[in-house]
Image (cartoon, rainbow, N blue to C red; front, side):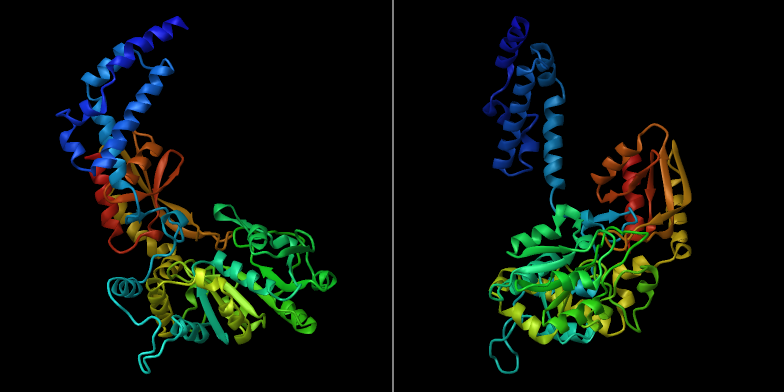
Length: 477
């Protein structure tokens, strides 16, 4: 104990003050590269970290003197400044093969949708005024009309994400006198990304959850038996990120709609991902297995269908609700809607995305195009990348058959054949290479598998092939 105390007693006086660090000529240029308050925070954090090491007996006077005389001081602060510069939302190259990658922003937008968002973001725009009459109107009137045309529903409304859509739906039907119970199949009470649980959303919305059926089997009779005076809504939830296989049975949307009509109760179907289909957008449904289609859900007769705008639909983050006119009108009248409604930028992106679908250009939506690409179409890109990387010393490069997954809980049982570039370095671990690439300019995200990097061209956008090769070249130069 006395030895550690002696060590601390000798080391603490050697710690420089903030004022000394501010005037250290080795740090002046680095400190000038960030705002003063940020620089001061970095200096304080460094001294506090070193002070903690001294207290723990991990840093003695000799080692501290070596740090101060050597490059450790500059190196640590340079790393802090580097992290500051890399922080925040920046463009990256997604070479993971996961098209709807939640961590990397999910669906990339069509250039025309992105341009529409940029235009209204930097200018005034028509939002809540009618151009013809000059009178005030609803900000999403056009969006609602486009949703009607796209889905076949009587009306539509959009909020800031699908969780908000579910919340608005449940909260609205809570206001039906003493009716506060929502009936849901026990097998559909899912948890998806970010610990988002359907039962928790129901609780926050103020409703009472009434579970029916079992994990693997729920029948219409189970719903019927659970209906009582307090029943407010019959609801179906697509399980999104998992499948129950074997002896299973579930209530179809049409069966739920028929039961609701018979009992005079509203019905809802939360689709989650939101797969759009039609005569001119058939390619994606062919590769997504049994993922439920929006039009089919609307045609089933349920009162409200909700789905995500930034997953399979391929637009900016949003939660869409479409269905019967009276049901959507009730959602719009709920004061909670104002807290969840979209801003002008998101509305502009969604309008343009819907217009592309309705113009027969759905195959141009980037996420749909990437998911629809065949392995044969992707192989030439993988071979070009492999050829460009094969000249680096100490590297092993090959093109291998692999599988991509859609991502974001969409079609969890679907694996899409692809060709990936396997890249390994003789002297560097794959995890370390992956970390360096994430910090590169441009940043590159790849898969790590069997101590090698996998670059999957399925998720590469125009120009990304060159950006990927450039990032690797900069790293190994």
